[in-house]
Amino acid sequence: MRVVILSRSPRCYSTRRLREAARVRGHQVQVLDTLQFAISMEQENPGLLYRRRRLGEVDAVVPRIGASVTTFGTAVVRQFQQMGVFVANTANSIGNSRDKLRALQILSKHDIGIAPTMFVRNQADILMAIDRVGGAPVIIKMMQGTQGVGVILAESNKIAEAIVEAMQGAKQSVLIQKFVAESKGRDVRAFVVGNQVVGAMRRVAQGQEFRSNLHRGGKAEAIDLEPAYAEAAIRAAHILGLRIAGVDMLEGADGPQIIEVNSSPGLEGIEKATGKDIAGIIVDYINEQVAFPELDLRERMTVAHGHGVVEIQLGPHNPLTGQRIGSSGLGERDILVLTVERNGETMAVPDANFELLSGDRLLCFGDLAELRTLVPPKVKKRRRRI
Image (cartoon, rainbow, N blue to C red):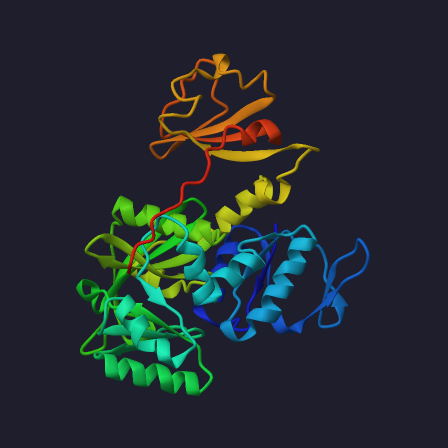
């Protein structure tokens, strides 16, 4: 397998470890500077040049895109995708996670814990926003901050209002986020690869510092992640479209609170805390995906004219609930049940005798007109005040 690592810092710990892990496993690996690419677009011939020379065959790309080069970096990743190369994280997923506002907007649609957050532009709305997230103290975050930079704890409404006004005056967009008091000075980082958490650590701030980032002097210890936290981390990564992610969570009174999902998580802290070869796990996962690529159903929703894939959640009143697949009439309606998810377990292509129960989540392929009749109408949710 020929692997390209996109990185502007070939000597940094994460890049070195990924390169070493790939070489140990017998793969060809190159570290290429993201900004040295030129993107070539011709009819039916998307391509890339590196330092003015046409790039050869590549099997997989590991993007390590810094915040300062996100726009061009994601364009390079997207071009690899157009060329049919497997990318560890897609351009869209990197964009989703890199933009803190966009990430929280996407996550907020789902049943997943996030710290209540407000985004306003009108200065007259600042005090209202602070009140909506529970009042001072609040966390104020710069949209483009990384490694704890641009994260401020405001102890009072007056201080918070002054900080937001000052940042807006300096043309900086900020988020106003609830301060989770029970988690002050510590958070959890879960490292997700594919469908599992491969390592987790608790980061604890030192002294009077409330930010637990290791770059701010925080200390890390390996932890056995509780199932609820592991599930939240995996779901958050998948909702944003990430295959590899560092998911940061606060330990709130009501369970995990997602605060950030990183598409280029550092390896040094997690490897030293856990003693695990996380770089090797990433390379093995990529090799498996190159050998047996997953079908992206979102890109193939109309596999054939009038046919597609639909997810159906069974409730107690669904006509399929309580029936066996063979006698449910699905076959006669040109519908195939691909998988059934029940209690966290997934059963692939269940047989005719399989009984469907309320709470099952079905992934079905078939005639779209028929499938629509099985999807329950949307129920308007009652808005909760935060």
